[in-house]
Amino acid sequence: MTVSRVLPLIMFFASLTAFAEVRADAATGLPPVVMEKADTNQDDRIDRQEFENRIIEMFQSSDKDGDQRLSIPELGPVNEKPFQEADKNNNKKLNLKEYIRFRFADFDRVDQDNDNLITPRELQNW
Ligand SMILES: [Ca+2]
Ligand SMILES: [Ca+2]
Ligand SMILES: [Ca+2]
Image (tube, rainbow, N blue to C red; front, side):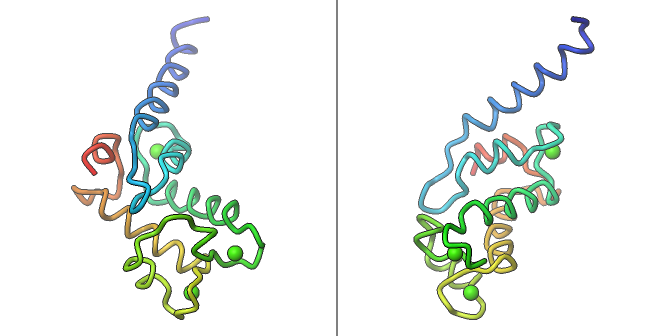
């Protein structure tokens, strides 16, 4: 294998490791797996589009009963206040639009320098 073939592979695994080391607070934060899989172009940054794509995937895989809404048991541990803020129609469930808003609140909290990119460093400082 030539160097130009190996290098992208190395960078891929390096970025996976960087994100895998991050431990999100189970009660308040995104599961670490969200971040591991979100960086689809593997530039070690999670932009808003990558994040949104990942949120949509999460929504679909979390919606166990297929009603297009996530209930609290389906969501797992959540902070009550952000949940209530996201649940605009107050039915104790989040539809996709509400869920995207709910998760982007996390994105904005993590993105400390407001450049719309999440870096491994920002995740670690979170
Ligand atoms: Ca990226
Ligand atoms: Ca559901
Ligand atoms: Ca709702």
